[in-house]
Length: 179
Image (cartoon, rainbow, N blue to C red; front, top):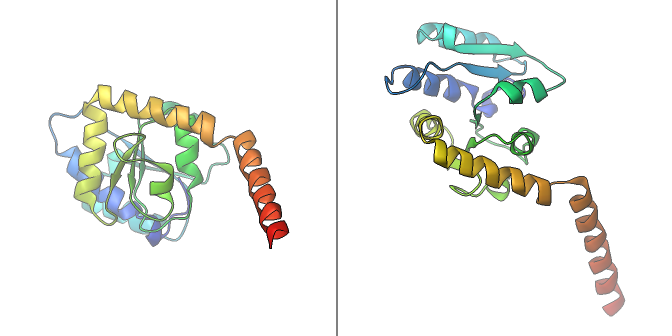
């Protein structure tokens, strides 16, 4: 989910989907990409060239992600660069297992093999392997989803944010009084 631009790595996700489509051990898959942007047509052409147009759905811009999280089995974040992606926090809160690239603030949110699977950016093979692992290893998938959900409920709530912000200001005031 997000803007369809080169740095978001959606082309890597389409390439990973082509790799997954050829694996006979997997159930049929469909990748739904939510968002719009300048790479939309290029992604459609790439899916067609790889023969997977039927497996890649570009849903366009959506205001409400809840229905998409409800139908998803996993979240794949293929970004080449990120800050702290809200879609990861939303997927955690929705109880989805996550395969994501190890970029920007993602490793600060997800711990590899504890709350998600982290892979190098710009590596469709590694992304496909992580997605495959989540789709075929239900024990791992459930464990990661539960741990991420628990973390979202304790660390990434509004109340937690407020406590951290108040604590930051209190520490700053204390430090300024000691100088």
